[in-house]
Length: 579
Image (cartoon, rainbow, N blue to C red; front, side, top):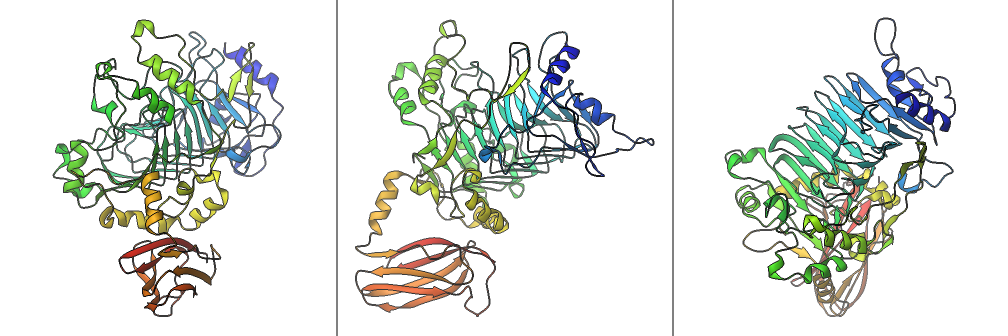
């Protein structure tokens, strides 16, 4: 099987180019990756290279799992981002060969003590030529670091990356995850990342995940781990099961579309387990109630929506069916953290805003059909289940030759008014790779944005505080808010230009005479500059801000709030000062 699989890969590939840099080697698509990298040593046994290059439109094969005890970087050509790659051909693809005896899919990489793995700019598929999918694609047992940037991971059963390494740093940015968990009625697989033991840090930013299980699964509490989950798009997550018991847990400016879409009910593997009943679970409070200084959280400014057709299906269920839609985080364990930990905040989130995608990544009717089939008695469940997944990006011909279906078959840019400025940073919710100009603003101000979110762990005011319900912004409250601040009373316009350097104009209009306050704040809520503090008559006004604070000193670049207050009414907007 190994020789045949390699031969089929060779048929598709061209001869590799020569060495291009002192520390870089272009991999030969006609030889297994394992052979080339593990054999690339000097006479003294040290590594000859640490960076291995892939070429566009080429396929590369692994011969089973490769164990890594050194720093390894595998890089495809920069394509400007997977979401916008429409050039001829396709990004490089790495596949694995099936087990010669069983035909089973095999893991790709394992980090051992001292190992570091960095992946960039290519596609990695867990599907093999026998039609089976890998369980865990990559694992760490003692590794130091795992990073993935501008990757596409597709078609796996359990986890893309599973860590059993204490103190590992994991960073995943600008990636696309497609079709985790396979096509079956299991609902606990298809994760992107799992930590069996505490890591040092986990960063998940600007990624798009479609048809997966969870973005992070862990066996916490992780009282030494910093987790940052910002600006990700999560679509059709069959299970979420967040645990938010980390030393520092920040999750903001993401959106979840059709999260926990199958709900919960009587014929689950674990009947009525809290794991399946809520978005946030396993937040046990009692084991760490005396260690609250080691736990902090801010979860806010995220979007949640279940599509109308799925809601309509659940509306047909009777009490006798005992089938329900999952809840959020309003459970006793989470409530205990919120009420007893002064730096544990669940803030305002968005509910039921339809994003209005340019080209959705899924067929909602098939999601409903799968949900209907899932809740049938096992003997009556159709096989195979209704297939709601994205078509294979990487597949094999009948002869076992890999093919790549490119570009991505969806476009998740959206036009929803509230989501487009819904982030804590005034930027769109979700993966900013769909909005490249906004991503540039985010990257230029990332440190300040994260600092403001850390401050929200302590100082956020619009928060979930039981027994009151979570403060959601909904289409109804959004319209009501717009009515409360209608032009009939006063109106605050978006500054222009925006972004700006160093001068911008702020315009507003009064319908009657009143005392007016117009103040600039940074994202920590600190006053930077008072532009107006006086009584004014009805009319239109325009005020310039020159980027100076009240002491006449230039402020640093970043996102700022400008707040107009008239009597007991206020309006605020965000603006970006570029430096």
